[in-house]
Image (cartoon, rainbow, N blue to C red; front, top):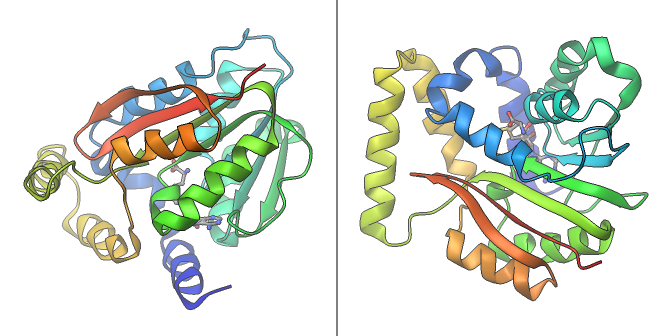
Length: 231
Ligand SMILES: C[S@@+](CC[C@H](N)C(=O)[O-])C[C@H]1O[C@@H](n2cnc3c(N)ncnc32)[C@H](O)[C@@H]1O
C-alpha cells in the first residue's frame, strides 16, 4: 500500500461515523446522480446479478443497487475498514446478499466474473494511468454484455470550468445548509483527488474495449458514465 493510499484510507476511516450525515449537501445533485447510476444498469429488475462495488464506502450506492435489483448479490470493496463497518450496519437487513472485502481495488483480484461493476465517488482518487489500467481490468472482469457504471467527481474541461464548478459546488452545499466543518473536511479530503475530464475517461473506456460508452448524467463536477462489454 503506498503512502497516499494509507493516508486516503486513514482520511476516510476518521470520517466514517460522520460521512453519511452531509452527503446530500456535499453532493447537491445527490438524487439525480445516484439515480442515473442505478438506471444505467439496464437489466431486468429480477435478474440475479453479480455486482462489484469499487470504493463502496458506507454502502450508499450498493444500497440503491440492492433495492433496484432484489436478487442481486453485491461485493463491496474498500480500503477503509471503518467505512465498510458502516456499510454492514446500513445493509444489515439484506446482509445475506452482501460480501465485504477490505482491499485496494487497484491491486486486488476481482474474483468471479460480474454482470455489473459500479463505483461512486472513488476512482477519481487514482492517478490517470491507474484509472486507465483499472478500466482494462474492469472490462476483463465483466461477463459478455456486462455493464460498468462510474458515478464520480470529474475535472472541468478547462481551468475556467474547473474553477466555476468548484465555486458553484461550495455555494450549493452552503445553500443546502452544510455545516462548515463538514464542508472544510470535504475540501481537506480533496487533496487526495485526481479527477480527470469526462471526455478523457470516455476515450479511455473505449480504449479498454468498452462499447456503448456514454455519459448519462453531468452536473458540475459530478458525472455518471460507463460502458458495456460486448456480447
Ligand atoms: C467518497 S467515498 C464514496 C463511498 C461510496 N461509494 C459513496 O458513494 O458514498 C470514497 C471511498 O473510496 C474508497 N477508496 C478510494 N480509493 C480506493 C482504492 N484504491 N481501493 C479501495 N477503496 C478505495 C475510500 O476508502 C472511500 O471509502
